[in-house]
Every structure is written in structure tokens, then in C-alpha cells.
Image (cartoon, rainbow, N blue to C red; front, side, top):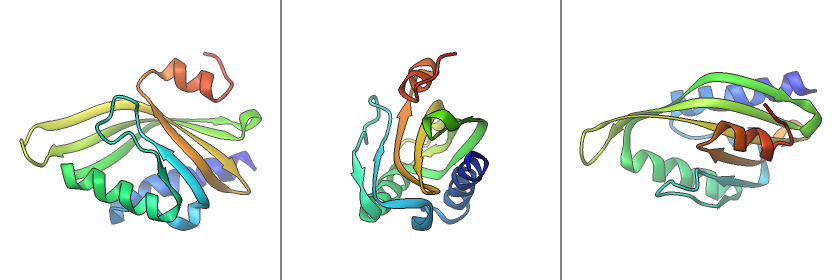
Amino acid sequence: MSREDVETVRAGFEHFNREGYLPEDAFDPRVELLNLRESPLPGPYRGYEGLRRWSDDLLEVLDDGRLEIQEMIDADEASAVITQVRLRGRARHTGIAVDLPFTIVSWMRDGRTYRTEGFSDHREALEAAGLSE
């Protein structure tokens, strides 16, 4: 099952980069999405409406915003997928290039993400998923 979870998460990132929004079919209807605590848009974003609002909020401040996967870790014992990403794009109002590395933990149930949270510290993300480096 965990291999399918990894592919579901990967496909969600690819869909966002291609279409500009997250695919609802990859998420539980009651999903909770939290950005980095340091983010100006920390969330939480809840449900499918929250997924749409998250995409709108992010792309309102970032032109050509995309999440580039650096590494994915299958944390099957925690029913989670840990993804190191880089958020890239250009700040809409200043034109400054954005290249922000961080880690996302996606907790999975029945093949769908029910909770996702961003971490600026990779070790903290591993700990949140019940793993250690």
C-alpha cells in the first residue's frame, strides 16, 4: 500500500505544478493542510474548499509557483509520505526569485491524504512522522 501512497503524493505535486491546484481525488474530504509555521499563510486549510483557498493564496503572492520534489521517503509504519521539496517561483509584488527548501509530511488513509504539514526543519518532519534520522 505504501508504494501507492508515494505515487498518490507524487501525482498530487505534479498536478499542482501543471494545473495550479491540488487534485481533490488525492485528498480526504476532511483534509487539513498546514504550511510552515513561519509562512505568512500558515493555515490551517480544511476540506476541499481549503485546498482551493490554499492554491489561490499561494499563487496570489507567487508567479510561476511550483513545488519541485527533491526526495520522497515512504514512512509506511507511520502511514505517511515525507517529501523534501523546493518551492520555486517569483514573488508577485517584488519580482524577487523564491527558492525555499522544506519538508512536507502527508499522512495517508485509504489511499488519500488526510493531513499534510510543512516543516522548515527536516528532522522535525521526521519526528512528526514518528521517525528519526
